[in-house]
Amino acid sequence: MSAEIIQSRREWLLSDRPASRLQARLGRAYVTWRRFSANRLALIGLLIIIALLVVAALADVLAPYSPTIGDLKNARLLPPGAAHWFGTDDLGRDIYSRIVYGSRWTLYVVILVAVIAAPIGLLVGTVAGYAGGWTDAILMRITDIFLAFPKLVLALAFVAALGPGIENAVLAIAITSWPPYARIARAETLTVRNSDYIKAVQLMGASPFRIVLRHIMPLCVSSLIVRVTLDMAGIILTAAGLGFLGLGAQPPLPEWGAMIASGRRFILDQWWVAAAPGAAILIVSLGFNLLGDGLRDALDPRSGDQ
Amino acid sequence: MTAAIAIQGLEVVFDRFRALKGVSLEVGEGQSYGLVGESGSGKSTLLKAITGLAPVASGTVTVNGKTLGKTRDKAFYRDVQMVFQDPYGSLHPRQTVDRLLQEPLAIHGIADGEKRIERALDEVGLGKGFRFRYAHQLSGGQRQRVAIARALILEPSILLLDEPTSALDASVQAEVLNLLEEVRRRRKLTFLMVSHDLAIITHMCERLMVMQNGEAVETLTASQLIGHRVSEDYTRNLLRASEGFVRV
Image (tube, rainbow over all chains, first blue to last red):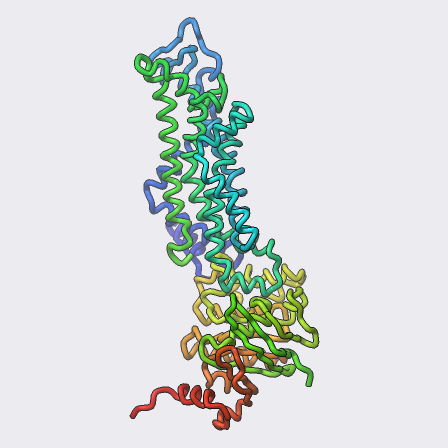
């Protein structure tokens, strides 16, 4: 019985003749999902990211200790055990709790960078690609200048100018990570700007603003989503790098990069202090990379007749 | 009869290449006018120059009594619409038919969208079942019907057709041509149609202009072309070529 319901639902989704806007959209989403879920590794990536979201949301419930207040007297640098799963650090803080709370900061950095950098890149790229001429030349030269700087060094310079702190680290990473997105968006725009379907919209009297926003941007978004997802790992690592150098999150924030930095001093005798946050960074970066790979296969407009 | 389209000495230059060299023509209201010639003769460029997609170097284009400047306003696009050659390239790959048809209505702020979309789909012989399909769910002929519906939804008086059937196979070609004929009769449209197929032009158009290398070779009526009463050698060659292979 239930198998029949599922079967008829699938037919409804894959219908050649959708009867409403919603059905057409859901059908399309379903096809994309089927293509995505055919990839096992991508599903693992998605699970890791969902797990990260859950941990960040439920940090208060999952963490047995406070992330910032430790027991200096009795619990300094304890090895992993039943009371402290990942051990404790030099200030007697439970590392497991700090990693659980640190997931919030990781998400905060990643989401904020994506939300700032991707739209800037998309806007610059599509406008440059569609307008052409002088606008294109000026916008792209600015992009080139930003691209010419090594990312971490430029971020370092920004943080040094703005002062250390996680907000400034986010800003610095965002400022350095939009140029590749602008390049991608421009390349995509150039391939579609002379197509007949864009000309057809021009012939309806649409304004350039409308064409870029409603007809060109949707075509660039999927390749941009893929690229941003693949970059998330890099963003986490850059944030961790800034944290490690003491220019990102400041103590006592439980940011993973800063945690590794503070564990550096005991890396030979108390390896778990640095290893636990290192493993967390590794797993989350891997998750984003797997997810991005899967999204590329599922969303790439050039594969299949989407 | 007043002229729907009047073109005087039109020149189009792309980076020093003269695509059109002083072409003039006049299309009466409600007339169907054909442009024939080999590839690169400038026939499609002429249509693009009218719509403002090609850079006009000199000459004037007058549509419904209004001489056009460098830019085209919205009112122009409500009068003049175009159907492109390649139905596989002229529909946005990420939009449903519904979205495609809604766009012109949204741009021009037309309120009774629902009704117009349904009417437009009926008019081109596609039922409601096609409304929420994406372009990749349609065949070539169906796509071209959608493109025609999109052009008609603003209720223009002039339709520019850039080889509307050359990408379709023979039976579908006939269907689309019949649809265009029917639409023209019902709406009293003016057609300016480009084709390299003389048979289609003689079938669809009353008058035609033969073009070569960006210049007008001669202007004929359809019956002159059918009766081979032509004066230029080039046209004679075209006619011979269109008869196809002759077995020796």
